[in-house]
Image 1 (tube, rainbow, N blue to C red):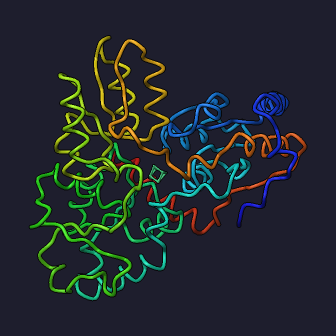
Image 2: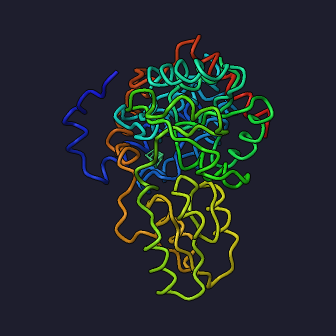
Image 3: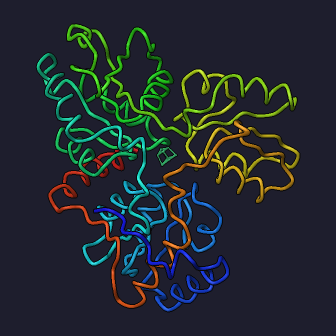
Length: 363
Ligand code: SF4
């Protein structure tokens, strides 16, 4: 399914008219509607969100609000899929712009994963290797993981899920984010050179010699987040030079050297919590998406909060949820027309739910 061009009626709307029409459509839908806003969305979207959070928290909230017939997910494609998997059959999940994907999730297709699994399990029996997928992955990838005895993880529970996986088998395959996988395994005492191996889905046989599987505990998928991959050690050094006493807090989708050099690393919810609880006068350089950093700075004017990368761009795919798209989706719903529904097929949803439920039973 591709995003059709928006009718001119919407693209030509002024900011004021867009807000007025979103407000009207939202109130006419009343309790039938819940709008979810991911932390990385721009302020013009977040102001309409009934709930704000990270991807899994929002999907769980959608499932709890089972009275809402329509869930409008202002986030990216995999998040809307997860919401559809976790909500009831009566609930309809809408992604205002279908072009809002996630470049990291797109780095692991089901075909690449099937190829990887077939290749590895020629050398390592499948019961000895446990797949783990970060929630930033397609429903098909989550379903594969569910069918093969593995679990999903988030950036806040990756450690517990990896520990669990290594009690279920001898090795773990972690996808699609190599950095979250490497950082988590490092935290557990594994050495990147000695214990980990990188599978490149764009190379024949993953670019790895089969004998190499045998000695390694963790197989990492060569995927990354283009936003968090931009942070580096020079920025950390510069921030420390500029403000003495500054605290560097980063997301674990950053590289291992950045996480090691930072004062703290954790999920978006962790970052929000640390800064919200800090005392007035605290100074922070934050290694995560700019919309969240700017919002934290506005909400805590008594602290100095800046992005670790002064020229960072927002997540370009999250940014595709423009208020014009939200207006278009809501006005259609208000007229009883569903546009941009995200619906995971029942078989995929059942298997994907397995991997999500397994994660929830671990943490
Ligand atoms: S910030 Fe990175 S991981 Fe998150 S949606 Fe954007 S590209 Fe994907």
